[in-house]
Image (cartoon, rainbow, N blue to C red; front, side, top):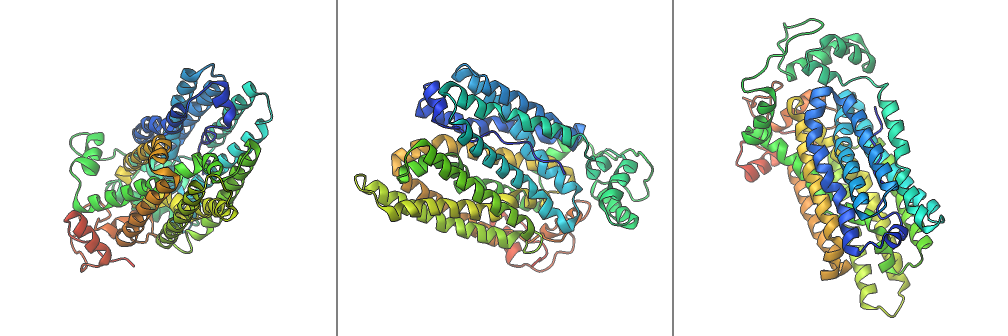
Length: 488
């Protein structure tokens, strides 16, 4: 499994860049959120690119954008060049956040898929933590050099990414979609326990790809539907989806959008501002608190890796969202108390704010963070997986950019405490959605996921639907579609 491309260091790396380039709060807001907006370009292109040149080469392609973006930001002579670097890096982010979980889900066995796909979130958190640590280390350099090293150092892991991924096998499911059955069989024999299991998985993937069972050989011509492959995928996913595909799409989009609407990027990106508002002072003190947040976030995601395939996706998601609600209420309460007593230092409120941020990132990393990549890549059928994940991530990035670029303005309008109370209210809606509409997927192969939403192995609507259940009736109420079979 390839490590996902490293994310850009948390912005701003310290106050040195804002002081050196004389950047205003509005410009900081734009730089904060614009990376997510730019990443939509890479996100939407990643699905088509990965279907065209393969999952592996798409990951290498993303590494070049990271490398170029890091160098442009490190050598930026002004705000315009800094924005150009963010644009290039943003395209790389878009490619990476799509291809890393898709590739891993397609190559991982069902018994360990949650563990392996969660590596994407693990490496993102490690990247964020290393960004905090490098910020702390480089903060001691002269003003005009410190922030350049903080941003430019991102070119190093990009090279490592390209080198490591070049030695990885291609996704067997992509190979089957291209009719390269012999190459797919070789990969499957490497990642399964027995040749018999490899043949069984190959047969399942052929069925999902629409290849007849009696069509065999090293390289075969994959039957194409009328209207062109790309048009057919768009029609099947977006333009004219079946009721079952619509349920899948809404479930995936719900996870994608609620992950950002609960304020995850605002907490991570603006944590120094939050800690400062809570009463912490001094650049080094703020960076130390931010580094502690990064350490907690990374350690908890390591725990989540082992729980995904043992506890399941749904319990972790519900527990995570519940903890996020409590922590956001605590953070909002602490910040409100501090804001209402500007001339007095209230130790318990400061402790509550710091503790709430640590609790927030812990609960986010135990569920809502890693489950997104695992769950959404699992439920999307093979033919539309790359495009569907790309569309979901585009929505995720759009919301992330909007949240990041409005956080300072929103907090000025309704206070920091009011902003986090708002996020808590959205998190309550997210918990209700997850509880009502998301079935458990643990232990199933990718080719079996469609049955949870009433899709047969070939993508058609299930003919013999079981009686309506709580999960299915949710979809019927939301979408007016007939419910699928029950899965507890």
